[in-house]
Image (tube, rainbow, N blue to C red; front, side, top):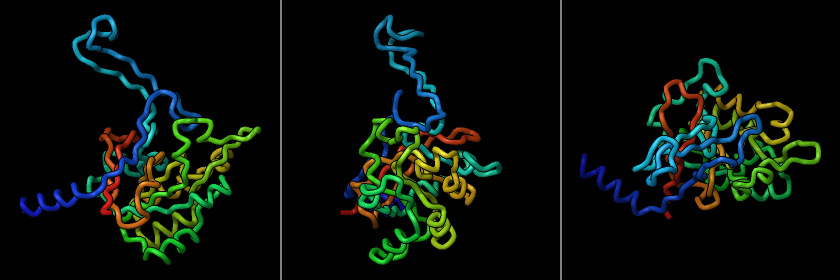
Length: 252
């Protein structure tokens, strides 16, 4: 068994690995109601720089759980839903399916991904496998880290960016049996819905006991089918969300 696993590792190392994670720092794009990150240097290599001492480097980070590329567990929206530490490690490596809607978004920034996108995908690439991680590639990650560009608000303050339609998520959950979703935008729902205080898509996916990754990066660098995604995060007890490190393994 040990020899067999080493062989699997050798195969994986021969693949192309794509980081799907943005680095986070104060000032990055985030949900408008959340506070910005605060970062303090407690210890520094040099004397007089750290607030607590010197000889090594240590920072104190203060940020909302939903910060940067992050994971939302069901409990983020749903009372009684799984907390972050209750999602098992078996769910952290999954088949990756990418729904590429960049062309549609280029002509309509308010594009809501309907079931027809899934139908078109499957007509070309086959049925979405059970347990998949389905990621939405809208091209919005290219706007990072410009917060104004990410939110794309009009003169009335209404945000315009793409998102999921509930009917599509229902199809993916109830008929395809997916494990999780992801997207390169700040929210599950389109910006116009968020601006109106509506969170129907996010409420649905988390109520269905699925989890999600928001603010993914580099989805344009992975194929729409055939790759694996690895999504990892810290394990805060009863955690409602936390920054994640996500990457794809691609067999070119």
